[in-house]
Length: 247
Image 1 (tube, one colour):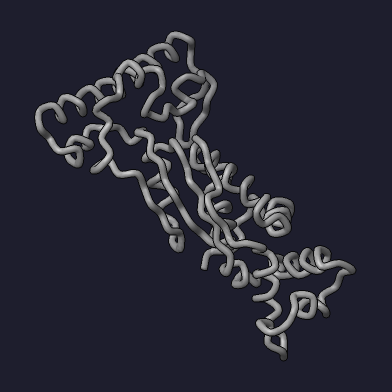
Image 2 (tube, helix red, strand yellow; image 1 turned 135 degrees about the vertical axis):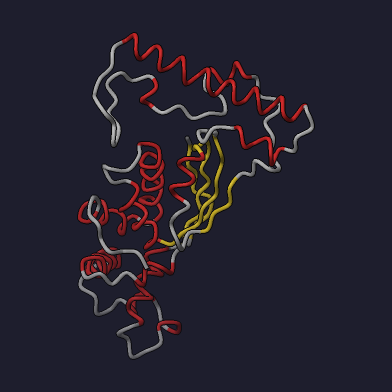
């Protein structure tokens, strides 16, 4: 898995603060400097004033201003299982690599055995992995070897069957029905800062599945560089709670 920030609102926290101050300003924020807009906010510097205001907004649940800034992320190599989880969220725009128009007829099934095309859950190769709703705990080395064998043979057979169906003239949009839900897919998603924090509430939580949690953590790392005051506050004071952020 790999996550890249493709594009994002410039000076996002300037936009957030301007939008928030507009609500209480008798003058028009579009015709004055940012310094004038922030004049009554506590702090000696503009950075201090932004930190004061953004912290106040997040502490008091005034989340609307965070909807004005957007970021677009490209995500490489998540499973279709992970994709199904993240695309449940409203107010996020997605483009998903198509299995109707992108076929995998040139993938060597033996490469699939080695990790190509299919995401393998950690539990396949970790004898001590404990997942949600799992019966029992650690398994023996013999059981782990059998678990790996069954998983790899299953996904290899699926890819072989898929390619055979393509050779038999089945269109890719129908042949894909035999591919596993662990098939890798690339995705582009756009969301505003408020929705990003809500997604993090839901998908970086301890009870989220490992893959969507890992993806969300990578998105948060990039968001902390793009919108640092906001996501520093989120990390320190809000993360791990249900914050009623959803629009």
